[in-house]
Length: 253
Image 1 (spheres, rainbow, N blue to C red):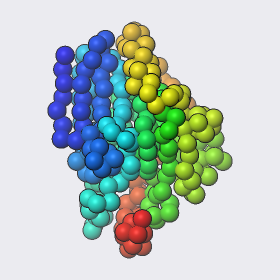
Image 2 (tube, rainbow, N blue to C red):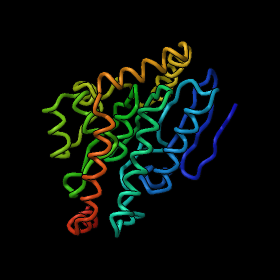
Image 3 (tube, rainbow, N blue to C red):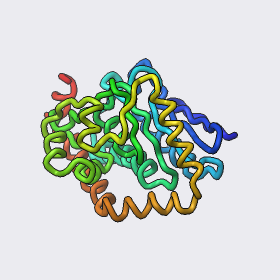
């Protein structure tokens, strides 16, 4: 069995071709610094290229899935080039999760905030612990969302609900996220990983060719503007980083 090694992410291959990719900064609630962003992209790219991997579980170590941007390690871009490099790194991770060949089962525990909420939405089947919660703080911080959620979120919950979630940044529990169609399934906290593993094994047992084709075609048909969303989000997020008001709001958050 092939395990891959990264600084902030664990990637282990289990029985039946099920690989578990775990965000591993539990002391920071798996908050996103540049190393974590790059490691997630590499971990999913490596998993998608690995012949032994048939399905992927995506989860977080400790008390949270991902608490969004790491304020303690935040390095605010000083130039547009630096800002674009950071945003493109985030979009690279989404590309590997959403457009990669292998099906992804999210096991969402604790908080999923901002970019972490985006990663949860990027999963093909998101299983949420009943205590888990998610929200988007970006607009309140003079920033913008990434992760193709401007295309994926309306497809999941409808345009009106997507507007509410993205503009106001309200906090949502797992049960409500299930009711509106964002969470695929909610389960008691203690069976989160066993449910995600069972789902991933079902996917891994299916024929590889048809599974990959179904993921590819469903994304292309149901969310046809996904690539365009990634591009437009990148430009909008870069513009937010370049506004001095953003620095003040981030420091006060």
